[in-house]
Structures are given as structure tokens and as C-alpha cells.
Image (tube, rainbow, N blue to C red; front, side, top):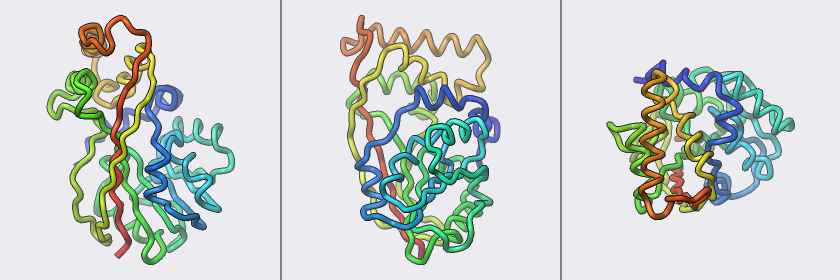
Length: 244
């Protein structure tokens, strides 16, 4: 079941989310949209971090997002996108209207059964559903340690990937993973964790403790100690489904 407090924690952080959260590699977009299509939908689009990859891959791009703060950022950045306020359980798009639906860092917030029914409804027959998640590279010990500070129960950030599973109305095709590296400043890395849902709902004392703990990790690791910027490796997992 979706934690409503966590899900709603993003409602007012559009600008910070866009500034500090990582984007996605173009190879992930290639996996979901390997050839030019007529209409692509980014569902739970946030501030458009993945939406921008769809612009050159579709004649029309639709972005659906429930947070007005995030949608405002997306509209300013990508005025050519047909941006709509809405959610995955009631998608404001006509039946069989899109070739591809992409969901980046958001599927775990959906009510799965009604969301899958809605996604299947708006997709054309044999249309593609692509679910994306960024996750830290297992080889990067300091990033994993920081993840455990924010999410001690699972040892990862709140947007975690999962193994492929059956989705009603869809056939699972394959999983593709892409490794990429981001150059990030220490200040931005610390600020990034302040945009994670578990941090957003924490009390001030807990937030301060989390930030201090992550700063200590950076000060202790040879790859980050005393550096104003450093390389941060990522893995992006893309789960590909076809409408059954």
C-alpha cells in the first residue's frame, strides 16, 4: 500500500527536485522508445527529467503529474509538451491514444491495479510500458552508506527498483540496465538527500542528524574527502512491458 504521507511529501519542492535530483541517460530512453513514435506519455513526470528525452522521439509528448509545483517547473522548461495535471489512477488521456508510456522514479507511488488498468486503457494495442529507476552503483560504498542513513530499513534511497513482476494487463519483455557517471558537487550531493521523501517528512532534529551523518561519510571516504566535487556512479534499470 502506498504511504500517503511519503507520496505527498513532494508537493512543494518542484524547483529543488529539478535542481538536485539526477536525470537519466539517453540510453534508457532508447530502450523504451527505440524508434520514433507518434505519441509518448510520461506518467508521474515530475519536473520533466525524463520527459525531455522523449521530445526527439515522438511527434507529441504528454506529461501527466499530480504535483502542481513540479508541473510548473516542467511547463517552464518544456513548453512544447502537453502537460496535464492528473494521476496514474485517472489518466486524463483518451483510450488507445499513446504508443509508449514511461514511468520514471514514480511507479512505486501508484495504486498498482487501477494504475495498470488506466495505462493499458490509454496505450494502443501492443503499446510499450517502460518503468525506470535510478539506483546507486553497488561498487560505490560511500553512496550506499549515505542511502542507509536516509533509508536504514532497506539501505537504498526511497526510489528503489525491484525485480520484474507481473502487472495486470501486461506482458514482461525484458530488463535493461545502464551504468553512467554524474559529476556532482559536495553541496549538491548533500542537498539532493533533502529532496528524498523520508527526509522531507522528518522533524528538524532528524533532518539535521541525517545531513551530519552523510557529511561524515563524505569526510571519511578517500574518494570524497576534502573534495568540492566528485564522480557519482549510477545504475538505471529499465523494465519493459507490452500491453497484453
